Image (cartoon, rainbow, N blue to C red):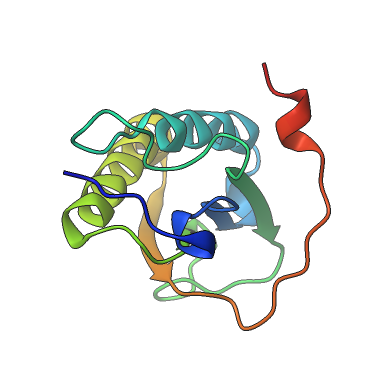
Length: 145
């Protein structure tokens, strides 16, 4: 059973998924579509009681190419995609594992063609922690249906 947690522990403003990737994937990987796919994956995740694991209004997925890189032996065809999922505390280990497995499975499925054409490393890291300072101002929730 999932029990509500007080205040900042509910993860109201998380998850944030940052994607860094080698620029040599720009032509073959649709990173915008990957962002959309992974945001949908995060929003669809549920606790055992059916409640949302992550809030829609707090979900952010962003991607940046690295124009300068060296992967493995440095050959120009080598590529890398790093997914860093930042979440606030309050979810148990099983729920974090569920989130990680779902995000990784969605990324692998979306990138299947890229993996068939390139030598690619894919890493997902989940960081959990309460911010020391977090200032906010937004009106996203009021614009969601």
